[in-house]
Image (cartoon, rainbow, N blue to C red; front, side, top):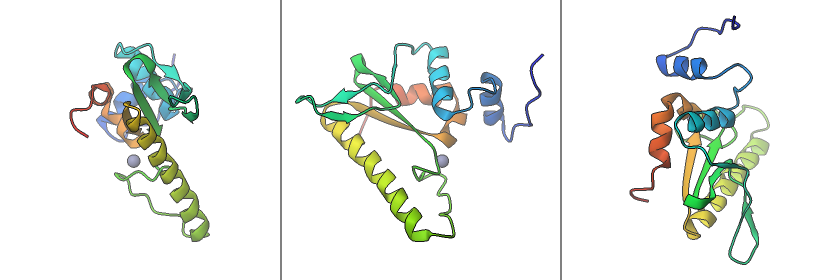
Length: 146
Ligand SMILES: [Zn+2]
C-alpha cells in the first residue's frame, strides 16, 4: 500500500505525481524516468563533453552522445526560469543578483559552446515537466528552427 500523496494542484501535476514514487522527486530524476518510459533509453547522465581539442566544455544533465543531443534540466529558481519569473529574494539583493547572473551566464555559455559544436541543446524547466512525456519527446526531436 503506497503512502497517500497530497492532492495534486492540476491534472498535469497529478500525472507527474502518479508516475513517480516519492523518492524520485528531483526534476532530473523525473525527466530520466519519463525518457525511459517513453522508450528513449540510452542517455548518459552528466556525460563529459570536450571540444575538438579535448578541452572540457560541460556535463549536461542528460546526453545522447550518438545523436548529439544534450538536455539541461533547470530548477526555476536557480536558473531564473523565464516562464515563472520568480521574485528575487528581498534581502541581500546584490548578492542574489550576482549569483543568479552567474548561473544564467554559465548556462548561456555552455549552450552556445554546444551549439557551435553542432549539438542540439534542449532546456527543460522544472515547471515544464508537468507537461508530461509528450512535451519532452517533442523537445528531443531535432530542432526545426533555431
Ligand atoms: Zn519555471
